[in-house]
Image (cartoon, rainbow over all chains, first blue to last red; front, top):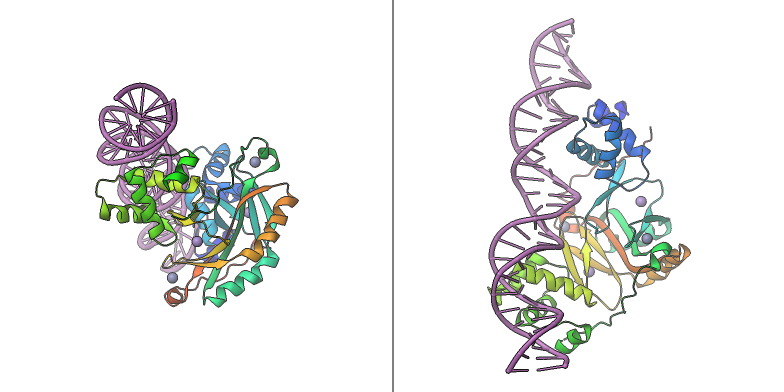
Length: 147
Length: 147
DNA sequence: ACAACCAATGAAAACGATTTTCACTTTCAA
DNA sequence: TTGAAAGTGAAAATCGTTTTCATTGGTTGT
Ligand SMILES: [Mn+2]
Ligand SMILES: [Mn+2]
Ligand SMILES: [Zn+2]
Ligand SMILES: [Zn+2]
């Protein structure tokens, strides 16, 4: 880990080590607040900005990526061997992952058809998980209107 | 328009009419600031909050939806007859749309396999458009490392 | 071991888009 | 016409994110 960072041009510090370990110890889709809370369990002196900066660093060195679900909070997701999409529950905010390996070639084709150089693909399904469906009132499907 | 809103339980006002007209007059992917600026061209007295609230209303009645690309600004996109995805240029922030009709059945299947009730699908490709590719320095592809 | 350089840290402040508050006005159904 | 409810505008509040700045400490070369 120290070696890896060195090759990328970054230093190792005690705080950084704690933060990295805690990040990979937590599951997927970690928020700054969650990681900050976790790290503080073992070291009360680590600052929020340091956690934030190291989360950014983890992304910069290619070990994670930001996930934005539109709920105003950025999550940090470990990069997985296979690309995946997310089912995002609007009720409880739970995230379920699903494989998207077979969709990528199609998307790559779309991109190249536009001379677009893709850096990342995002496939998300928002809705309600099984648990939250009962509590969710059905909004009537609106028809497209024009005036 | 007035009738449509009435059936939804909302009132019509001069400001609302201007805002709705301006929204549908602008293209796709409108930001609050853009719409605010547009509306102010014809009426300097309309407030920012009113524009914002009406954009939310347009979504609530099912005529548009929020689009979050992770650049910190919410865009409002008219709902189209066919579902579509976005190519989002990280350089110039340009958005290119593409048809996703044929991907939806697959995603629906994924959702139902998880007993998940889908409300919306989001398919995005981030990267660099043709114009921005030259200016963009290539970041070396990082290999997944574990420690 | 020491020095020097510069990245990293922590607290606090700044930022900026979004959302709410509040006093006042307007719409619309009865 | 009139009252209740919804809508408006300015301003302030929110809140996650990002930056600033003084200080600490890791790394490298001597
Ligand atoms: Mn994930
Ligand atoms: Mn669109
Ligand atoms: Zn749920
Ligand atoms: Zn571009």
